[in-house]
Image 1 (cartoon, rainbow, N blue to C red):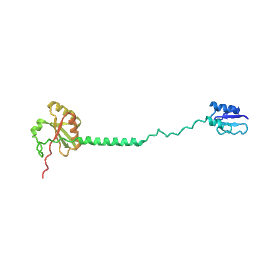
Image 2: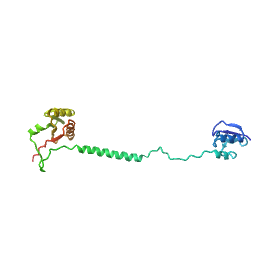
Image 3: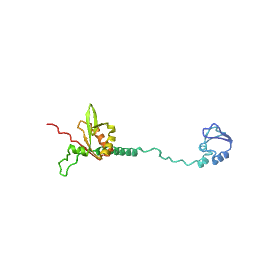
Image 4: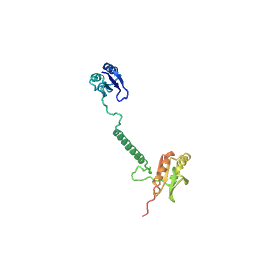
Length: 208
């Protein structure tokens, strides 16, 4: 009886093999236990590992089944989400803190509590750089020492005023109707110009 052997599912086969030839092919690794064999009597293809005559030899050379390992390429996103939330909270708190830090410097108080230090207009002119902000026709008009200045160029003007007068204190005269953002831009420009202290003109008391 002769045998024909083919690789699993292949249309081509090696025919006229004896049993010893098939066994030698298994031992040499030319054939795999999953390859198919057909004898001249039955005419049906079946795996070498299932054929009664070659099953034992195929079992001896069958590779050890690989262990299934969990897929380690999948990332656990929960720790990443936790870190992202912590960073988000940190940035929110930092931004809020920086906003709170922009506290307006009010005129200093004397050693006796409850009394606010006041200065005369002459002292203010001599010791400070005066910035006025007024609301005219729906827009803020800024003046530095009575000279109109655009808000975008305020830092350069203040820097030049500091260099010319050697004054490092700014006095802001801004009524309550001035937008808070404009006042904060003036304060930021003063810091950028090297001004160390910012004071505010106290608005007049409302008439009764």
